[in-house]
Length: 512
Image (cartoon, rainbow, N blue to C red; front, side, top):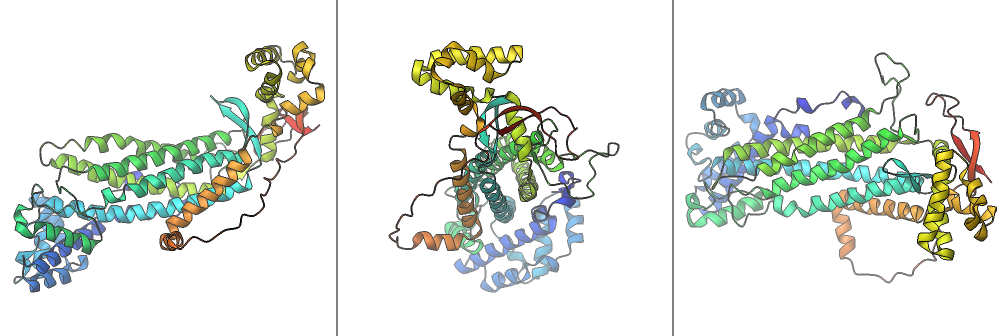
């Protein structure tokens, strides 16, 4: 499969994910030779082919011994995906033993099993990249756990969160995808070694034995029914990678929005010399965030053809096999491109905390309406409190009057709270809920999962060790939210130099 159509002009900004090369013709051919060698070794062990033939076939299964030009020419003439490679391989094995190459197997036994070996290598790379993403996310979640910002639902101010909480959401989904990728491995990494239709007829009574030996040699598992029409494990991989792309696209969309001058809260790293526009020198475009959105869309779109490939008619349909072969390769390459960009983004993500504070103040206290309503609800009932605060909030919005002033003038609100109490209740810094604790907890979760992905043997040994009695340490209080006691001010905030137009009129949060 050619991967040129999946290259990006931003590739020079990110490390090569190392996945596209796995799907080169040369690597796939080598994997096919590896499967042919495993088949010959297994058949020699059970007596289906002579032992000297098995040894000769294994010794010759090196791509650099073959004439690939001859294979290419024969492929064009024969119009077959494997026979020319087998014929060239048999020639290299030699006249005495070459006739035992590919004994009893059908084309898909070799090509699909070889592709599974390639997918296993790609799967390993994907998990390694996810580990890097999780480590970078973990650092970001911890460092920004207590950095307040506006929470937004339906693109409108909702209630305050912290940036670390936003990252915690991404970590939660990313670790769930890791779980999905690990759970599908038993259904994905299997040999397909049942002959023409999966009945082992060409292998005779030794069929199951040959299958299990090939699986052992290649470190794969076997299929209960080795039918060429069963491909759900590979389809599942594409679907999970599609879900991974969904999370990544959402992250790209969020960062894309946060980089807008109207937000100005978070920025992907932009190396010196990066050109944003051919005509507008000031542009600082979110290139990698845009990549995440476009590449995510490409990968998610592969879910439909992957599912379509399950519609084999009867015992096999070459069109469905070829469709999934190409789709799985594309999905793996695109997943690598996405993850390599996430690593770069989170390693160098820049936050503008002052701008976050300014944006929090834009609503001039309206973001605290829920906090006030909940407290008032304890006095007069939740629904009545909602009606009172709703009326004041709507009047503030319609008439562009300060929310705080209207609240202090409201008869019901003023009955229960003085101005200082109202200020406290509508202060966004006082209504972060469990944002800080959740951010730190998910940062730790990201580190644990990354450890498991990068050091599975060490983690397995730790989990298998006898449990030791652990004395609980005294609880440690979560760090306080910074600058508690902010209230809305009409003072303008000076934007970061070079990012936003001066005099934007944003309201700051300043000490009360």
